Amino acid sequence: MSLTSKVKPYKFQMGSFAPATYKAQFPYPLRRPNGMSIEEYSRFCLRQFKDFLHTHVAPEEIVAVIMEPVQGEGGFIVPPKSFVQQVVEICKRHGIFFIADEIQMGFGRTGTLFASTQFDIEPDLITLSKSLASGIPISAVTGRAEIMDAPNSGELGGTYGGSPIGCVAVLAVIEKIEREHLQDKALEIGKRIRDTFISLQQEIPCIAEVRGLGAMCAVEFSDPFMGQPATEFVAKYVKACREADVIVLSAGIHGNVVRFLTPLVITFEQLDEELGIMSETLQKMYKYSELKGKDVQ
Image (cartoon, rainbow, N blue to C red; front, top):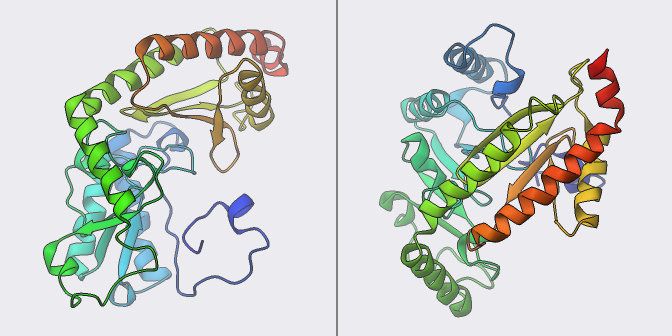
């Protein structure tokens, strides 16, 4: 709760949180200054992070930096690879643990078992859950041996730690991922999703960006005339998709992002049907929306 920046619905009216928890700016490539390349933006964000370590908290006082390799609730934002790598290097230089929060994007969703692999980094610790056991409640922490083996046997644990049912489910998931090549399938799922919405961008300019890593994809919507987040439009789109029997979730701090958490076991026939419904629904909505009127101006 202390770590999330999404106040509603997670933190609202929930009282006090853990002190000495600091939040640095996460890169948002779509919102980078005009004329700035991705590499220039990566260096810009890195300078901001270094400044943060001088103006908000000293590196000597930081135990760990926790980062989602791909931001989840924030809108499935993929940071520049070089930025992530440099943050890890800064952590090493100052003796700070780097923890990759892979609870939402881990276990094959991005096309590799761990999303961190996509950035060519080795976190000190990785947190896992959700897809880990395909719906069975279980979470896990994995990491470097010198960290994981530091406590004596039995010193760390919880009420439901080591649940046999959960552990069996994890083993079954790993077996299925390997047997059915679901990591490769995640890449194809993501490609089909992104290709579908990229092809709609010229026709529907309120699609500000189509992004993602593997099957973890997102479509961000903005007012094409003013550039403001199209929050109301996305809310109506999500509702219209659900009425057409496709469950869609929004994300982002403004709620103007449609995110895809497609099951990796989906058939391509099912996926194409889903994308067809979403495309048709979006075309109908945009045709009669205020955003189209603004675009015509």
